Length: 340
Image 1 (cartoon, rainbow, N blue to C red):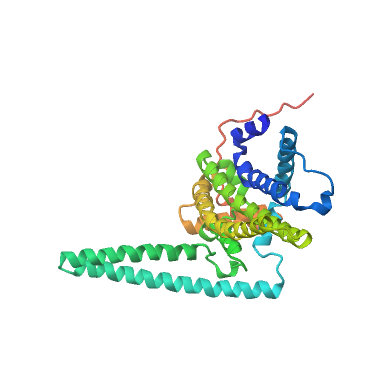
Image 2: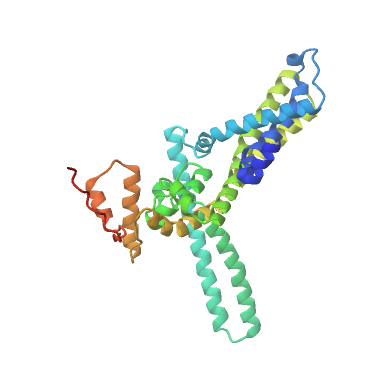
């Protein structure tokens, strides 16, 4: 327990929030609510009282479950992103989200035009009271525009990157930011970006990522708990306590899914800042210099991404040499004397 607290103080807190806290809550709920109802499984055995030994076993089980969830995190995310859906369902849902995105864009444009029109009317009117009223209306429309644009921002910029679920689109908006702006493949260069980013940015990224992981783990654990409650009701014909626990678990699952999508937006802000700030020191660490124009910088990062993703190519390497830092030798190495 002391080592666990030391790990939390030394940087393990995001892991505890992401995986251990939901696991501990789920196992405690199972032991308190579901396990006592399993009469046919327990038989004459009684559930041991909550003492120090039972508490230790609960913590150990929670740690094991948290490690399993952490190890399966990639698969858990991919399930929510719809990777394993049948092809026809994936295509249908992707098209549905494309239509939704177009509606969100139309609504945002409409609100933007109305906002600009109200501002112009407010500046043109001679009546002070009418100008204040129009400015107040413009403020309200501006808030609505910001909320509408938030919905658009939860989707990737390129329609080809659209996914079949809301979670998938929010994740792809985050993952494709670097490539869409700078042609910097942040997925391929993620470890390098983290190594050169400021400590404050790394801290923000880890904390916002922990919130997303927390809600994702809650989705799966609460769904599992709801299924176990339903199985208990069918098997043992239990009363209101199991029904209430199962209903609450199902509600937590639905709410956690929506909160995971909302929390991805905060995580996306940290990732975008990390890409914007980290690309300059990353170029220096890779022995490259940032070109004077954004167009050339985009070409440079495209070549770097291809270099680390695909096998070595001589033609791409020569194009990348144009962006290498000029290294001047300040020391002349002495010639090696011939022996004999």
